[in-house]
Length: 231
Image 1 (cartoon, rainbow, N blue to C red):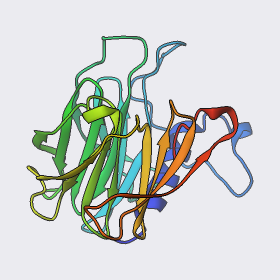
Image 2: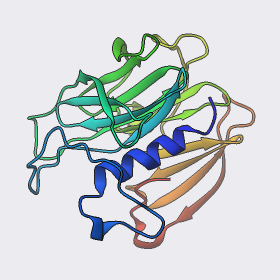
Image 3: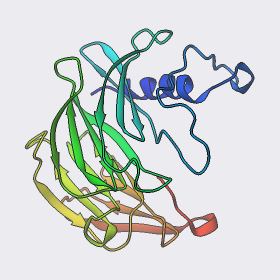
Image 4: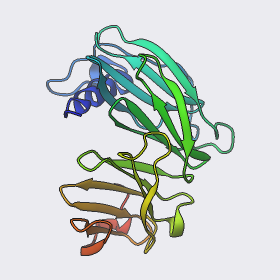
């Protein structure tokens, strides 16, 4: 997987979040706007997060929404085309909902506090729910270098992280290990380290994962406001 997923995330974020020309920033031009579920008013939200990836030369935008996750072909950024939607639980459970998307190869993984992790295949061009597995999770992050999925918060043991091996199976990955020392709201695994946003503890903890599955604390830093939301 090349870093082009970041381009997809940037372009789609601009398309979804910029409403008026006056809201556009420096060197940023609105090309299109998609709003499948309009009309949300506080405290209700209709979207949560955005992701992008490239599959078979097509740039795919992934939009977690209240009723599920919407997939767009953004290869022509001026005219995105909806490829389909994978339904998800939790739309009516409370005013706010959380859903997070990430990808590995041609599969997209979606977390929610209302249901198990979803694995969606884009191998045929359209999104297909391939499997559900694991715990209810607030967020998820993927270490592409090692093919590990980190599921964070939710009902993971201790509210920490469960780490799955995507190299063994894309749809039924085995658990490699868990981290349960504190609640983890979000994390970022990269280069032999994982950066944990321990929101309730108000700190960023850096884990040394170079001797994985051994997880060693390299440092713990209290953040301003002591409400470490994401890393």
